[in-house]
Image (cartoon, rainbow, N blue to C red):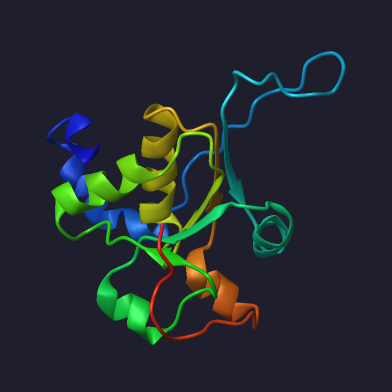
Amino acid sequence: MRSVFFPGFTALLLMACGQATTSHQSEPAANGVAEASSPILKDVSNDEFAALIATKEGALLLDVRTPEEWNEGHLEGAAHADYWGDETAFETAMNAIPRDRTVLVYCAGGGRSGLTAKELIEAGHQEVYNLEDGISGWEGQGLPVVTGPPVAM
């Protein structure tokens, strides 16, 4: 997926981890319900992310940090795919996620996960949420992290 970006984008990627992305969410129709064909891409706060983890049954919780960052602590129940690692392995992992499965993605500061969220939407995923301040903001608020192996995607 990352190969679809123009060459100059690489420099932006190197600076992206601490920067949140722009949010997009489908607009509700007149009856207050979002149209099924309109994908949801939204940056969310720690509280919103925690609520989504608790209520979005079957959602994939996805950590896109490096293995070293992962080993320092991650959210319980998260799967892991290294955004900066092997591009083919990352793309294979992203392509294996069913397009209709909700994805809750995070990184250290919201940048890599924001880029991943956008790429997932561009690839046809219907509902993707990005933890806007990443796990650093999560931990900064005193919310829990764990150590151990990732769950399967």
